[in-house]
Image (cartoon, rainbow, N blue to C red; front, top):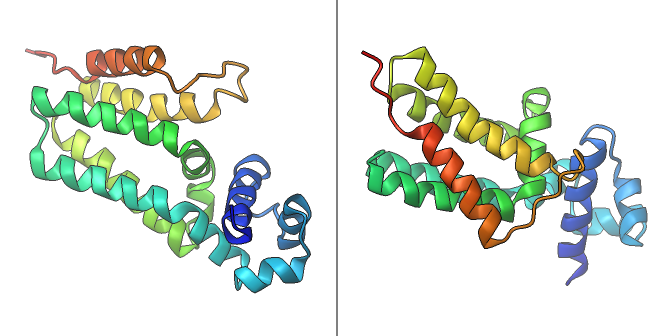
Length: 184
């Protein structure tokens, strides 16, 4: 792993654990075994480092949401989307943790506002699929609750492995929550 990639990894872990505002370039350098000036050689600022660290997650989530908007929420595609969404959460746990826990307070950062916008787009997509408050709550719990549980499971002493059994259980539960209910 290059110094550039290692700095992104270290920064992401520290941003998620200690918070973006509480993390300094000096601290990231110490954790990576580098000086502050070495970190600044690779990244012009803490915000540039954050952007480099979280951009792959944002781009992947944008792809998922664009495909969801294009394909709609048919029962066939719902399962595919849930599989992809669960894989996304497992692949980008630190980033999701950062978006969920710090997104609202870091809106002034362009990259975080981009993440917030795509999360709002996802929420609006599911919200527009029903007028019933019951279903809106189920959608929020299914998507937001799953993301929160997975990205904070280590902190809750409930570490979940990215294996087939865990993924299958999560997809099954989310499918049950997202299945339309006849509210007549």
